[in-house]
Image 1 (cartoon, rainbow, N blue to C red):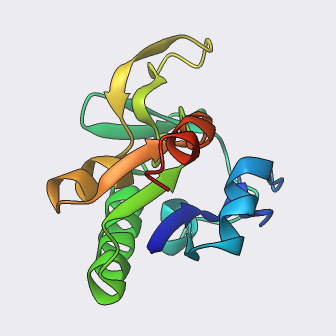
Image 2: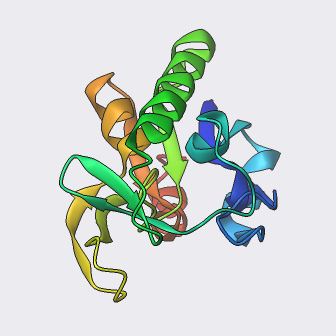
Length: 147
């Protein structure tokens, strides 16, 4: 199976703080599947490291008050293009991220408050028929034979 995966979950230092968030359950999928690393922020032209950002409705605003929505949309479109090219039907993305969050994201107040919602990339992938999971779901998905 071909699966899009947030690059930070595979160990790439592309998070806003320049760090990665390698996930053992996700890395174990390399034994059985082809994982395509993606990062909506970097693919949208944002630097690493970068000022943290959060979604506010349809917009994405960084902690300095700048609207970075265009970069997030550009990156989401690039990730969606890769999904199409590789015929990927599943993505495993970094939870709570303004690009990759799946079901819950930070609320735009920079107070670590979660709200229901989707990151820009996750939302576009879903609109294009890609099933999006967060990294915490992987062990259960493996156990159920989905991955």
